[in-house]
Amino acid sequence: MKIKRTERFVRIWLVIFLVVITFFSVYSIATSRQRGLDLISKPETENEAIDFFYFTFSLVIVHGILSFILTLIIVFVGNAYLEVKRNSLTDALTNLYNKRYFYRILYIEIKRAKRFMHPLSLLVIDLDNFKKYNDKFGHHAGDKLLRNIANVLKSSIRSIDTVARFGGEEFTILLPEASHSEAVRVAERIRKNIQHSKSGEIDVTASIGLATYDGKSEITEKVLFKEADELLYQAKKAGKNVVKKRILN
Image (cartoon, rainbow, N blue to C red; front, side, top):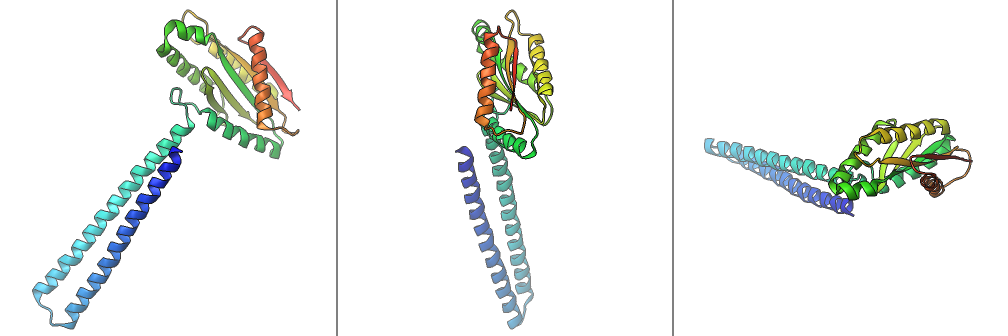
C-alpha cells in the first residue's frame, strides 16, 4: 500500500513539473520569437537590443532553475520510493528478507525448478530455547541475539540462496539447484554454527526441517513449505538441535 501511494505521489509531481516546464518553454520560445520579430520589423536601437539580450538570458536562467528543481525532486522522491520498497521487503530488526518476499521468491523458484528440472531445497529453522532466553535477559538481548543469528545464517549460505526471517525466532532458507546431500550439509553447518554461537547461560540452538524437491514431479510452493514445516515439528519432538530431512518426489 505504501509503495502504491509513493508511486502516485511520484507521478503527480512529475506531471505537475513537466507541465510547468513545458508551458514555460513554449512561452519562452514564443515570447523570444515575437521580440525578435519586433526588433527586425522596426529600426533597432541599442537599448532594445540590450533589453532583448537580457530578456532571453533571464528566460534561459529560469528554465535552468526549474529543470534543476525537477531533477532534485526526481532524485529525492525516487530515493524515498526505493527506501519504502526496500522496507516493505525486509525485516527491520535483522535486515533479512521478510515473509512476504520469501513467498514471492518461493513461487518463482518452484516455477524455475519445474521448468529446468533442477532440485530446490527449503530449510525451515526455529531457534530452541529462545523464549527462555528472551524472558531471562530481556527483549533487547533477544533482539541482539536474533541479529547475530541472522549474520550466522547469511554467512552460511551461497550468494544465490535466499534467507528470510519468517517471524519471531523462525527463519527460512531457499537453496536453488542444491541437491539433497548439498542441502543437508548446509543445514548441518547452520545448526553447528548456531550451536557454537555465544548466547550466554542459556544454550540457544536450532531445529531444522529440510525438504528437497527433485524438480521432476508436480508440486506447489504450499506443499513444499508444509513438508519442511512438518519436518521442523519432528525435529522439535526429537529433542531439538536436530535436522530432519526428506526428498519429495
